[in-house]
Amino acid sequence: TFGGGSARGFNPGGGGGPANEAVGGTITTVGAYTVHTFTSSGTFTVQSSEITDIEYLVVAAGGGGGGGSFTGSAGAGAGGLRSSLVGTNSGGGASAESRVTLSAGGYAVVIGAGGASTTVSGGQGNNGSNTTFGSNTSLDIVSVGGGGGGGYQDTGGNGGSSGGGGAGTSVAAGTPTSGQGYAGAVGRTTPQNPDNYPGGGGGGAAGIGTALSSEASGGGPGLQVNIDGNNYYWAGGGGGTGYSYRAGPGGIGGGGGGNMSNYNSSDGSGAAPGGGSAINAGQDGSFFQGSGSNLGNGGANTGGGSGGCQTASYGTNAGGSGIVIVRYLT
Image (cartoon, rainbow, N blue to C red; front, side):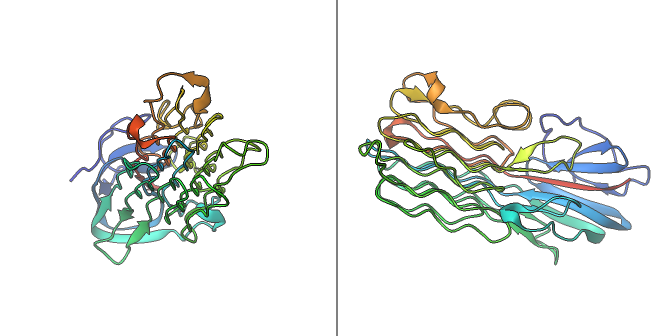
């Protein structure tokens, strides 16, 4: 059974190496490795007796941004990131996990969907969904969905990486999952602009939501994991937004930019797969004049968190969906 459609930047292939060791997902050959990429749910099926030293990247979906009440609000946390690629880390500064040996059989892959932003003024965004690999077996790798961004005076949601704290005085971010991501930034008022009420940026796989001196916080950076021959970043946090100053940028790795009333924010899509550029950089929403209806979505299949919105009435956005990539020596 083949699971997952064609990912941007990947060409559909045939069997997994000369011995057709495994099937499932979009199959490519990168150097000495066979790579299986799942952008939607499916099954990784080992057809040989076993495959040793399998490396994986499992990224959960990002959360949805918080909604202000004509105040700032927070960006969402990125989905949790777990990696066993030698020489890299997992999210949250954890060491890479151990490679695995899988015997013949089917290993379910479930790709998490991004959490929606809130439609309630001042409300917290929804968490992203978990992404799992082999949850039907003893392998059972689970990456936790990103936490939703906080709304007005509302804390950020817990998750793989956590959502930023909403607008207000030192509003707390959520709690990230150990070994998967970082915390969002605290929401606050600022001495320079006390009426701005900027929300915190969501946490990313490689760092906390970043603080701008007098404006909204940017999303935390995603983590670079080259498991498929591409130097992509994954799981960047969503940018927060303020009331009267520019919105925060999304974190590199598919994070969506924040949104305010007179500015459109950029989403984290763009060049493959996700992010505002070929290195998956989230962009700063403040540079895009418009009606305020274009909210900053997380990039598809990056696990990026979505940006916060000044008011929930400007529409809805969502975190980026997750991804699973598996590779082994051909």
